[in-house]
Length: 116
Image 1 (cartoon, rainbow, N blue to C red):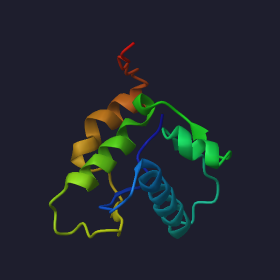
Image 2 (image 1 turned 45 degrees about the horizontal axis):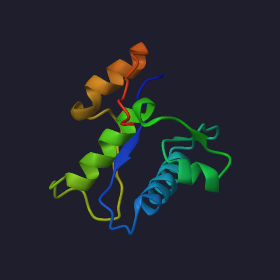
Image 3 (image 1 turned 135 degrees about the vertical axis):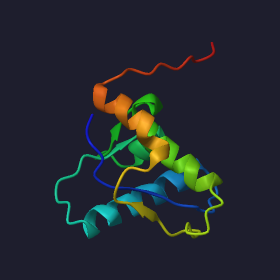
């Protein structure tokens, strides 16, 4: 749980989900470095990425909803300001994540049904 610090969205051309998650991690680390953030806790809902890099903490997708919404926005956006393969930085939380950010700040639990 926490408050918005910074975030990004990006259109990328990728081969698979692991490639997309890896690029997101790279862009996120570069963003943190550009903001002079020294101490990071990196969480991912990608079990494959977490297995490749043991320094990452795996969390379920439901605990990572804001990041998921940003990823979907980048993938589907027709916004001309969002260039392919270049992160679009949000210094303030964008309106389309407000609801989930508020839920996260309040510690609201989200469940997902998994088929048998």
